[in-house]
Length: 349
Ligand code: SAH
Image 1 (tube, rainbow, N blue to C red):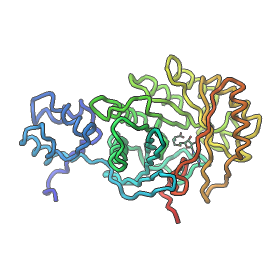
Image 2 (cartoon, helix red, strand yellow; image 1 turned 135 degrees about the vertical axis):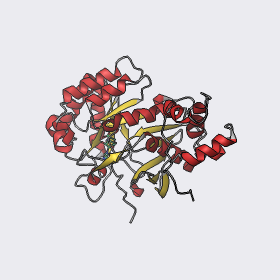
Image 3 (cartoon, rainbow, N blue to C red; image 1 turned 45 degrees about the horizontal axis):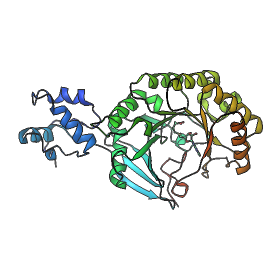
Image 4 (cartoon, rainbow, N blue to C red; image 1 turned 120 degrees about the horizontal axis):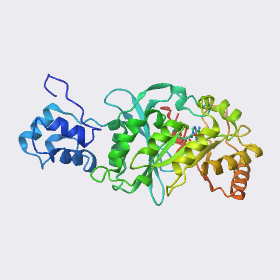
């Protein structure tokens, strides 16, 4: 038990500059912040008394004043395909889910950016939770640390997708701070091209992301290239026009190696009509983007069914004929409610 006294400051999620400001009164050596940064994010040791390249007295002082507090695993749910969903308890309160998705050649971590989500997309279960709060940078990178430890994944050999709970670009500054820690060579050391930020499509957030010196891949949940259909499924489409969104995506991709992606979760009889395939091809060309068709993951609470395979194939043919790269994202982790759009603390019955 910690002795009663001032509540220790949570160091987890701070960048070098903020660490330096906290450490300066305790130790004049400027490299201390670098050492602490490496312990937190490269070595991922969160007990200050184990930071062996620091003087003993400083370690004791840090242990007394600071408590690096990453999220803690509260539950794990394994699906039959090897996907594992983790429920993470946040030190500041609340829970989020994060998912480890193994594939032959790589591991992917799907992480959350908010507790709940306020965007109300009709096909997504997280929407039913409503919005509680933004995650701070430590709560974001801490999900990655927890999944690395739980899965024994080697450093640097995994991908991250911001496709869990929440809208990353509504929490853009904290997400950017987390990206800086994840890609920092003395942090998690992950290549920026291994990270994808997926958004409902907030042009301002997309432009902010593009200003960063180190930029991840961008995916936009378009869902339908028709204003009326999109508005009927995604309330955000009432305030963002398709053309404005396509132009923000194009600007983001200009001069970059990776084309942005437009994601479309395919709903039977809702957004899979033939003319929507043609509209999608046209919009993707305007946006300079490729297209990822997503298999819909049903839950009993949602009134949609996945599009039949033949419809997906039709879309792929139309895209290909228009010179747009199209792929299908197959569902993973469905039987543990770990798949896209299922993150709402649901459990197998
Ligand atoms: N808010 C962000 C990230 C979370 S959603 C965004 O909107 O992109 C991540 C992806 O899951 C989105 O592309 C979304 O369209 C998709 N998705 C949501 N519900 C789904 C469901 N039930 N089945 C399949 N994909 C779904």
